Structure formats: structure tokens, C-alpha cells
Image (tube, rainbow, N blue to C red; front, side):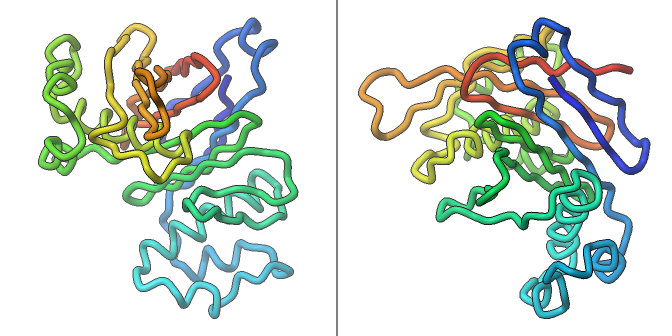
Length: 239
């Protein structure tokens, strides 16, 4: 079940997957921001009562990284209407100390994504391009690369999808010992459902690990992937 809120109408909206899903699952809310503002403009959109000031953002060496960080906070406070700041675990995963919601964050190019929900999940967005293809041997096994021939997805686009899907799984797992290459394996692509089956092998697992589902949507500027630990969720795009 998905609710998409975005500031500029640059992307198709994603709607819920039916009343049967709504009744069984709590919805996840996805918020997108197309970053065209300067860091100073984004800073001006944040609550004056919150400690977002020059001393906080001065730690960023990259202006682009600073704007990504600020854009997520703008989404959090101005769009999602949550005043609590985001905290971070030792693993690097975001969380709220007091607000009873799970949170996942992603950035790519000039887009930021904030996802909120009640289940353990991970979200990732990846811009289209040749970078994933150039690095494909570092994150896909030979049998995973063969999957592209069983789909209608272009090889370069498949590489971006696979990279994003593994990132989403890594975030959902919240396990720093997982490696994208050795521990997270894409086993099947269900194109009609836009769903990947991904095997996750934790170092503590004695058996064959678990198979998780990753939903995906090819958006105009990037691919969006979402992974849940508690079952299959399907993202359906409304054109």
C-alpha cells in the first residue's frame, strides 16, 4: 500500500494495491523532493525552533550531500509533519527515538526520498546511468547476471535495478555484516508483478537463509525499490 507525496509533478503517482492489502497491512508513505534549491533556501524552510543552522550543516564537505540531508528534513517537518529529528544507529540506519514509525531514506542525483511506515523495510532510489553496469561484477554473481536474458529489461537498466534492490534489502536487514555480493542474491524476476525474489544469507544462518521480496517501479528519472521483511508487497504504478 503506497501513498506518494511529491512537491513537483515530475513522476507518475503510485496508488494502493487494493482494499484486501489495505486491511492486512499498514500503509507505507513515500515522500519525494526534487532538489532545485540552494542549501540556504532549504535551511529557510525548516522550523526556526529546530537546531538546523550553519553550525550543523557546516560539517558537510559536499554541497550536494548537504542539500540531500536538508531536503529529507524538509520532507520530514514540512510535508510529513513530524517534529522529532532523525537519529542514527551504530549501523547507520535511521530511526526515531519517540515516534512509533520506521523510517528509510535514499538520495540519487538531485532527488531525495523519505519513507515512513510501521513495518521493517528499506527503500532505495537509483538514477539511471552506466555506473552500475561498470561495477556489475562487484555486486552480481554470474547466475544473477544471467537473469537479464529472461526479462525484457535492458541490461543497463537491469544493473541499476539490481544495485538498488540489494541496497533496499541491506537497509531492511539492518545488518552491517551483509555483503551485497556474497550475502544478498537475486533469484527471480517477476516482471508482471514488478517483484524480485532475493535470498538473504546472514552470517548467523546455518541453513539457506531467507527469501525476501523487493518491489520496484521504473520512474522517469530513477528506479524505486522497496524491500519488506514480513511478506510480499506490490507497488502498482498509475499512469
